[in-house]
Image (tube, rainbow, N blue to C red; front, side, top):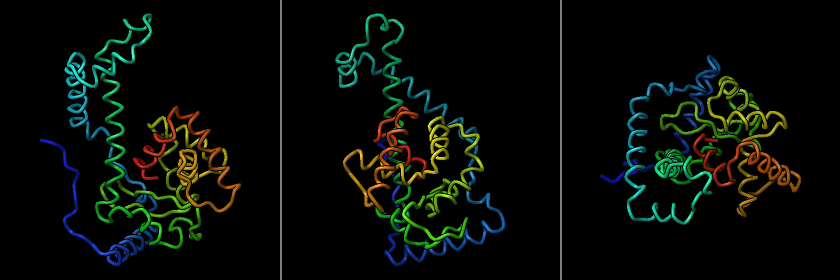
Length: 249
């Protein structure tokens, strides 16, 4: 049956959402004072191995089915041939597998981004930013470089942290990150004391969708950061935005 995105049956007013978020922030402010690790809890990927194996098997099966089936994928392969010297080394079913894997990556990024709207609606990320005035990690006032961080990836909303507070929390696990994109970007962040919010602004600006910035220098710095991030990650600006959404940054 066709996939249907989970939808919350209980609609909340804006006032209810803000009240919920303020209680949520207060909860973590108390909990993090006792044990900061509550701000970065992750289940091991291995716990989902049976599910991931089924997804991988389905990808392989569908790739073999689509490789010779008339339709858009077959036409795409025909319209985008690989050089003759490479053709025997890149089987057509493997090329379809790579295309399907990329489609899955975009789907996961979109679906994971949509989880923030389950409780709070389409403007949920904006509400998360307005629910707190200070960082619960550092105590400093929240400024332009607010980072949205998920303490647990189980549907609960992200918390608004300062760039320094977010780096402090992520530093607990990021040094051994298994995500090559994250590993490369964290090194870039630390080298220039940058933030994920800055990367997002730079990508949006270079895609022609600029967000308000504190100054021209800040906007230029964000664009420079985004260009460097594209170089080290091998992702496009749009793909970086999808990655940021998937990570909750």
